[in-house]
Length: 424
Image (cartoon, rainbow, N blue to C red; front, side, top):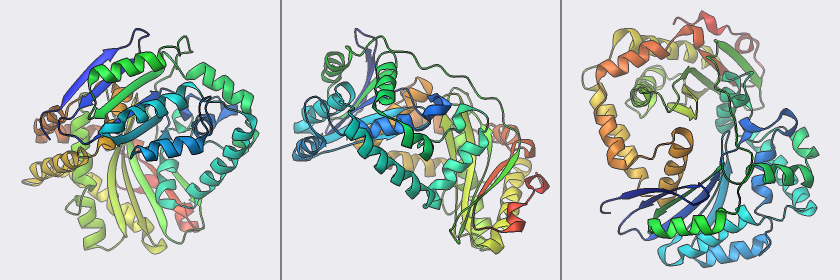
């Protein structure tokens, strides 16, 4: 698609604006991110960030939700939002000729929401259904459970959706107060990608968002290193879902790229160690994969798998064997280079999507304060050595910090399993 240009500027009010212009792109996207999420909520307001994300879409001073839908779809685009543990984001993507519509819609929901009683009541019903739906989707629910269990006792453990009983009690006043406190400078950042010029994105951000100034800056405390733990959650699903992993590095750590390669060697792709050992050779699981979860001041190396009840414990034991073998036995010939190409290929393919570029820009900047081009990311992957990966494996893979979460039907042997008996 040609050479990509990434630009950075700050508006007069101090809002960071990061633009990734892609010559030849036929689409354009913009995103406004508020640096507040579930880890920033008081105990009595758990779920307010997610509920507010829903409510601001209901109606603005300029248009109801149906009118928003007609305008963005009439422009050949889509608009959406998401709430995480550390941010709330609103974005729109259209064809390049109608990018001004995406800019108008995103700005309108962030700057001009009505937040009235009726909209709050309606969205609470929807959010409560969403929370129930997540608990009935074990593939997604196990991710939430693992993160919450790993960071137990710290605000990072607070799930994005909150607690149903608390959400039921939230009203317009609480949401309006939370909006007035958090939605603005210095908690705002703006991103644009695709067929959009940096000057255009900067002017839009300054004109539309600089009036949202003087808000309370989100303050956070870095979590300590969690100790080992085991948690069983009862669920109706007959298939068991297991998460195993270790606290790891935050995005500011110099070994963050070797960490991602270690994770991929363990469990990315069908040639990975876990897939071959746990599924192909022993048929203990239906699915298994590894990821690195990142927060602004913490991280985790995680394995997720699913199996029937008779294979859960053996699957955990075999996974622990894989961890130990890579830590103590080193890498196989060609394994690192093969994994580098695997990651590079996935990264390059993901960059073909304007929406993915927006997401990457926003996540990287909000978590680390950096914004790297594709070329820079590829160079960093290429520069990782076998010694780097082994140093990280020795540092991260420890029985003293291994955390396990299991989701499934009641089973005494699984519920009472002692994770410390795994050989690490």
